[in-house]
Length: 576
Image 1 (cartoon, rainbow, N blue to C red):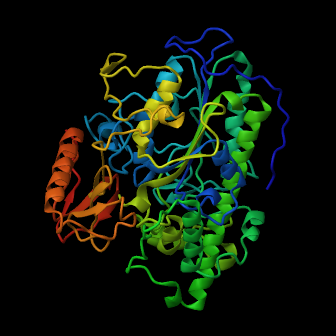
Image 2 (cartoon, rainbow, N blue to C red; image 1 turned 180 degrees about the vertical axis):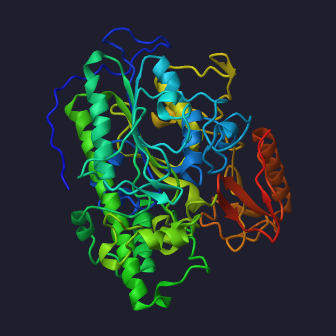
Image 3 (cartoon, helix red, strand yellow; image 1 turned 180 degrees about the horizontal axis):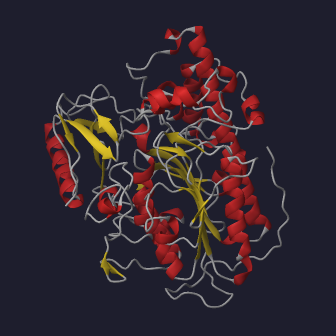
């Protein structure tokens, strides 16, 4: 694998002083650049600075240069998080309350149909562009599968993007489900027929974003750059030199690695005295229950995952170094986070994958991690990645929604800080708009009704002007695949389908129980009633469809997302 070495001319912008809503027309626009870096399926404890053993020196250094946000919440899966990120609205309001993809013109015309980032919102990217920012994207989109709903339609000036949720990380352009067997990589509006022979996602996505930033760097306009990496999302693939680096690291198994992470997190104060990490779920096999052959393959899976995270970190380091070399770093606000918790579900169970994957991929031990392979980590390693939390991607548990998050703005955010204030993905759009001094136009934008921002800027908190971002009465809700969560302060109401939950409401005090193990629903009926009322208000406010005692089938063209709750089944209805 090649690493590009480039020399850039230094041409810095001025620091943040007074700002206006007016688009800049000269070379002295004082507003900051904004760099948004999003990892795909990275676990809370995977970075070194968050307790992990994976080599992440560049992200660790970024944390040292800014502030670690240790209580940052996202949605349980990719596209709902990205919809909330770009819109500042609840995922159901924005159109991605489910994981469906827009498939036809007929569906597109139905008001309220979920499955794409709808036109009832305006992205903060569009607002930044209207206000004079360059707007660039490189990476994963997954917010609309039809013309009119692509990155350039939603405010990006330049974009190198992957249409669907994942693909091979190499040049072979393999998709991840039979319906889309060839990866849909596009630059601007032109779908690519081939990728460079030496393509690797984390490298080339970085190259492209640097190219976009560099071409207009001297025109005096600030930029917004969205680095939407596809690592470490499955299929787990990495260049061999990164894989070799982790030979033998994971032979001790799940508990060995997790316990070492817990020790480091406790020493760093990320797990406070008296807080008990979530234990392994009884549905998952313990390490000692695996055969030697199974252990061999499990070790290899985590070795590949670590290699992907390592390569991701190295390329983020290249991106940061470019900003420094070009003189842009000092006037750039940088925010890094993961779109959800680490993945523990088996993608081989999706759609026709039980048949399609074995027939089309070589997952033998010697080929794992190479082009033409298709493996994921599984629940045992996801539990490790999401230390100290419960469950993983797809669940509105802490393990599914907690992200390792870092914010940097040189000379504005004090270096080496840490915040445990509750912050959510809904707060990003207000924060970035405040930095750019751009107002949100709700309730109307360019002649159409749009939903308002429902989050709050956390920039005043980052620079020490506010001790918290939200008052204790703030409510944050999530519904996905009929799994549900509502949170107010440290209180959390949670409902998961069996066998992952009891198929009824569970109540947790996260201040005392970060592992979500001590259900207080029976002992605190008063608090249970209060939280259920908050949930019902959330459902009403966001037009959320929920079903009791049913098997819910979320239709995606010919495919379905199936959540088993009981023997009956219904099709997910169209939204009105």
